[in-house]
Amino acid sequence: MTIHIHISEVAQSHFCHLIDKEGVQNLALRIFLDNPGSPLAEVGISFCPPGEEKPTDLMLSYDSLTVYIDKLSAPFLDEADIDYKTDELGGQLSISAPKIKGAKPTSEAGLFERVTYILETEINPNLAHHGGMVKLVEITADNALVLQFGGGCQGCGMVDVTLKQGIERTLMEQLPEITAIIDSTDHTSGDNPYYSER
Image (cartoon, rainbow, N blue to C red):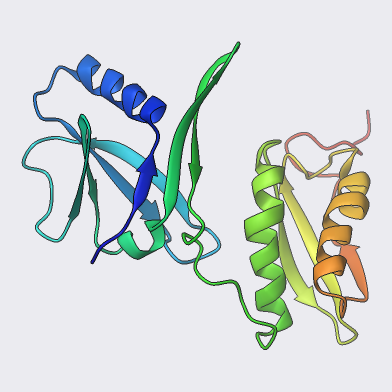
């Protein structure tokens, strides 16, 4: 199996700096996926000390860096792009891996599957920046979606704006058969409820 992962020169330099700080000779990196091929897929990067590579791993060699990819993750990491971006606040890894979540459900797939895919790939990553998430609870007989918010979105005073201007617009533009979006969340409970009695 042949795959291509682009690691920018800046990212390679960043990884080499981290490896040098570990003080272990021939230390490599391992890139892997949690939940490969699903909407919950996430990229992980760790050190791979000498001797800890597996016989089934794919090895990728860069100018001053060796990377091991586990066999199950490999097809989903093909064409990934890893960069390291810096600004006045510091630096951050940027990972773009278009295949990690698997194929987008086709128009023939069930509405539940298509809605869940959009929630997990487009909406929840944005909500996660604020410690929140949303899940699909059910679809009514007339194609209304019943959603439930969690984390930082539960009890948030801006949840109506998020629902109407973000989530509802995104879902209804992509899936015009949806007739309505219903928020079933109990916003009076949770760790920091917005609507609790003062």
